[in-house]
Image 1 (cartoon, one colour):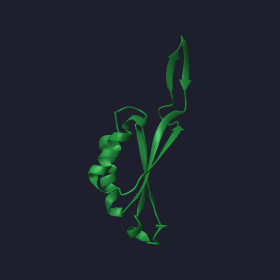
Image 2 (cartoon, rainbow, N blue to C red):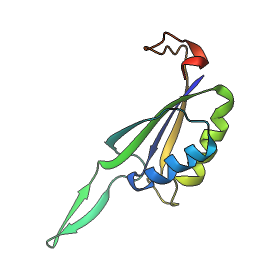
Image 3 (tube, rainbow, N blue to C red):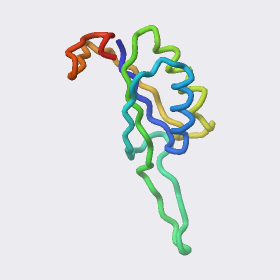
Length: 113
């Protein structure tokens, strides 16, 4: 099993969720509003004639655990639905998961997904 974390633009959340649903490999997902900085280095805005820089940009982090064989499908769904082609489109991280236990039933492993 693998944990897939994806940091994406907030405005792309609905598109990514729809793509994951169409792919049929995501049975559960956690979504967190985050702020951060990366290569984008912030954005400059003007308000009442004053320029200011937002160096921590709002993003959304998707967090899901899937079977090993589903990772390529999840990555493809995110890569096709999340980008707009500019800095700040986000990143995907994949981590190994040692164990999953469903609290309600006590099921373990892939059955718990």
